[in-house]
Length: 154
Image 1: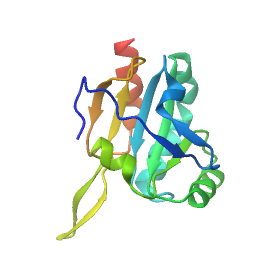
Image 2: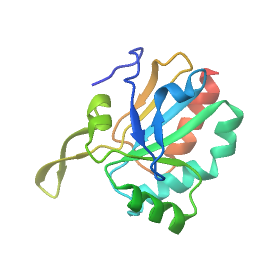
Image 3: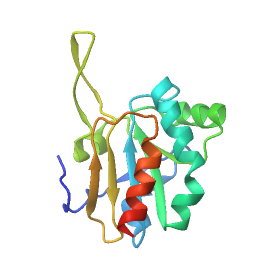
């Protein structure tokens, strides 16, 4: 589990198109790495559409947006096409990225406990350190909160 001021765990993981994306690719930029449970579900769709609508605002602040779930590249492509998303989605099928950041863990739903993806977001500064963490966020207006935090820190 990472904490604020920790060095962000490095990664090399495929995006929706199979291109390997590494944290190193974004050296000198801010990175928003958000984990979400599943493509094309209500909360995840709200969150992805909101990040897409604010993408240009983030770009003006030298900030890259990366969404990550355990869904396949094919699932990500369908989700992007269906919702007209303009963000990069990482395919963490082995859950190694989520585990490195502490986004994979125990969940509870309707009295049932299981392992799953927590809706967590990590803000990584241009030096590669975790600057802010949002845990178990509500999808609605989350992207706006993240944008406000980036504006505050820059």
